Image (cartoon, each protein chain N blue to C red):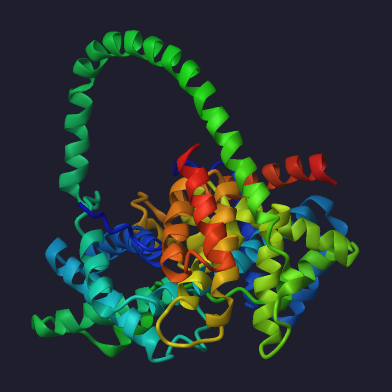
Length: 193
Length: 263
């Protein structure tokens, strides 16, 4: 018997799909009141659309993260499904959906980091250290910090996606995660530099 | 989790101001007042730098990850994508009241679990003894695998690369091979190599086609350095189909495959 092992791409996409599904189900269910079966259909169609849009080059100039882009597709598919079911959806509702924060600006980030007045080499070494920590963030910090800083999801959306009781719970957990990151960074920095 | 006490409240307000600055939501006056405050308050400044640093790191790693995922999306067909999406939705995820109610019944089962804990304790002692013996074996295997990776990764010399048509592509390939050789950023380099290896072995001719042997070899030896024999074997087996047993690369591939089998 020959077992066909998944390729690297398939493994990466499997992981992406699994991660996104748990978030999408919570989000679509709570935001739109859709059933699990409806959420499944929307998710599967949205995943295929993501693939096709990538093939046709629509993701070339994407400014958001892939995950945020994917949620945009899910949201549109959810509206399509609701319209098909005869539920009233107004365009204003789509615009006012509290999904995203404003995007973080790269020049502002650099301005704050620049307050340390360090040499470029030192800054680069610290950045490499940060990247290493960020790759290994444990749960729930992994989900929350990535959702907030990379995907720009609002506190409300994060609370829905990760099943928190309220936006305040998300704020407090995120705050603790940022402190954990700071402690880890300082610990490693002291060891390395 | 909801009990935001007074100390936290002040800290959370500071964080909101930092985010407001980073998102460009402040007016010019607010922004200069904010920056002045940072100059005079070391603690607040350290918090702002910490958040900025975290945001930058996540952005950099995120871009890297998205690039890998977009390339992965390009390398599979629609049928595979449908199968992957369908498979993911089979996972059970707790989202509603019914699931929360389900978690209450879990608590009711606690007694049974505690009863079972006695047996678990006895088993865990036995397992620990087994682990000590097994770890000795694993460590031996681990060090041999890494040594094999080191030995064979060094058999490739990047100075022999073509140096022609695609300087940027060649620069990237060379840098990835050097990363494997020097054990630098191994995890990220392996991810990138895995994508490029797939792209290079696609039927359609592309920028990476000519670099397939180098990419495959670096990936396989890199996996060994990462103590990942299984993935190394998958790559080498594919290479053994691509390169004849008479060719230099074909010979090396078969030799390494045999050594892995003998580990």
